[in-house]
Amino acid sequence: SFMPLVLRRCCTAAAPHSRRLPGSRRAMGDVAAAGGAAESRPRRPALFVCRHGEREDYAWSARGENWQAQADRPWDTPLTPSGHLQARALGESLVAHWYDTLNVAPISRVVVSPLLRCVETGAAVAEFLGLQSVVLEPRLAETMCEEWYRSWAVPGANSTWGGPDMGKPVPLDDLHPAARGPASACHATATSIQALREARSLSSVGRGVEVFAADRDAPVFEYSWDKFESEAEQAQRMRSVAQAELPPLSAAGASEAAAGAGSVLLVSHGGPTGALFHMLMEETPPYCGYCGLFAYVRSDAPAGWEALVAGNHDHLDRIEGAARCGPNDMVEQQKAKVGKTS
Image 1 (cartoon, helix red, strand yellow):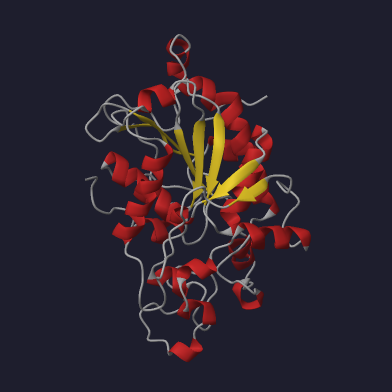
Image 2 (cartoon, helix red, strand yellow):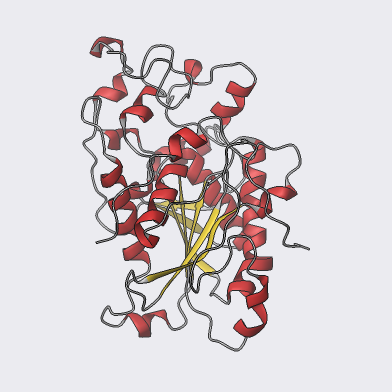
């Protein structure tokens, strides 16, 4: 059975320590005291947000090898076997601890970034939760900024955020061809994921979970090399997903729709996940390691949101020997402090 554990931070020494959320918000890793009083209240839908599990390319890098150099899609690393275990541990912690502790409705919908590490994370969680499908949402994708492109598209790229020589001019002919086209072409589709599964190029974990395209018109991102996405643009698209998946209490019919509604899990990336926290809470985001968990509910506060959990990693304690963070995490996430909610 799952036992909530004391919060342990990332292996990076510079990672910030756990802190308490101000006001009525609960501590990041210590919300168990709220469980008893919560049982008498109706369960409300929550917006859970998590980062993907351990990346295959970062595991190669830790061994002194370059995954990008041999990959057909060097921007789209899958999970390691430990990453799948991390995702399953997250699913277990949601069922065995967080639903009751937070007094929120069980997750009935999983929405994922269209990059394989997030698709696989979402599918592993969904499989544990007994859900039949996940939904691709391009707005949850990794930041399409210069640092991201340089991590895979320039000569000698080895997954390092910003590349081997950030700022050095790169002739267009030396770039990976995908960097010269629209960023949306780099995103996986339901069809491409099914093809990878049939070719057994992906793990069998979560293979029985169907992957569907978003049930709304998906945006087409025209970002490319020398036409990069800004941090503010990234944060705005993340917030638009949150608003769509859990409408404000003031929206017409929102209260009635919330009654009996299930919670939603969004699976994204470290930088975008931190940026969403900043946009919704107007505070510096906590560090987000592999499968780092956040939970929000709608409130009548001026910002319209309350954070119940922020940057919790307790479930990682259950996976012995797995990396808890990537080598680029702190550099990648330090840019998540973008504009305030409007």
